[in-house]
Length: 286
Image (cartoon, rainbow, N blue to C red; front, side):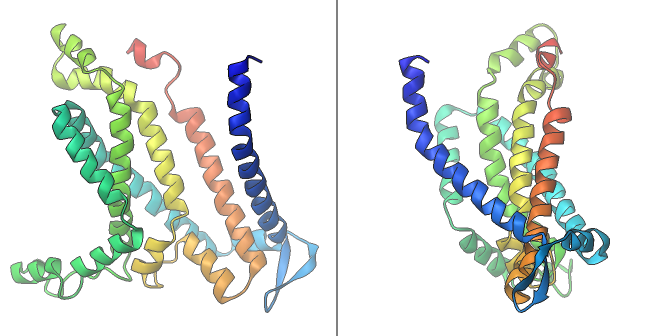
């Protein structure tokens, strides 16, 4: 090992050690707890069993919550990519000064706490908020739009918190693709749209997949939006886990739900990494 490599290992080792210990310890704790059946009042049976997992996989209540969480996460990921990609692409074509100020504004807004952003949504879409006033005044919705306690409201909250993050990640990806590649394609007779499809899009696809997976992982575990805007009516998996642990004190079932959520997210990431990424050299050959 070279001195430089040894120095890098020594610098990274403490961080990796602490992270590994914390990660493995917490996962081991709730994995072991998930194998014990709840007997009430926060107590579990001493013997191991697969009762919790069997109950989850055969109970429509738990499966419906899981499908709901998967559906919301997938829809928001697609919407955030569709909205953010054109904006990120446009930013890479703006003059550097304009792009820098725009990105600074986006990053600054991202520093706001999620609770502050959600409060702004609640005020904006409140019964007497500006959105509902406009809807009633124009006759588009006589009773206005109800944000809290509805699935559309939860999805608006997720999208609101996701789009800026997607924009920043996609902009970082697109900045690595030289504009002159598209220009060279156009010089050789390709239209602007064809140059984008054959040059920029294939080269940016790995970044798009990374952005989608990170967003999916965050959304599958997101709790605050569904808890605040869901109003107790939209039971996503994280909300269900919190309710199982805090309200019912069913630690075995709560741990099993957590394990199932983790396994599902890991499987989705593995499948996407294996089948979703372009093969080596594909982008260059197109």
